[in-house]
Length: 124
Image (cartoon, rainbow, N blue to C red; front, side, top):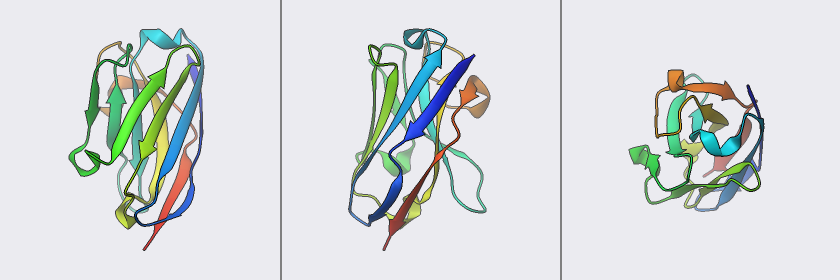
């Protein structure tokens, strides 16, 4: 089992930036992929980004490509989501998730552990 704690959310104006962090403990961090999901009010949780165990491969949903960057530091057991050029439609609770596998996945069922979430609010 993996324990995940997110941080870095907050209120930002459109066009601004935020960096989310997710600290992991428990299972050996470098053996599994990591991902970020988000859930806006009244909407289903959606995939945002994922990164393989080594950090060598990444995947993004189309709406954030070119604006968000996922990265990981296996020495610090931490995964990051750098969010630039934020838009009001990026407003959501963002969740960090630990994959069941080392390789990239994007389905919710392929992630076995979840953080509590951190709120990101983008004002227009």
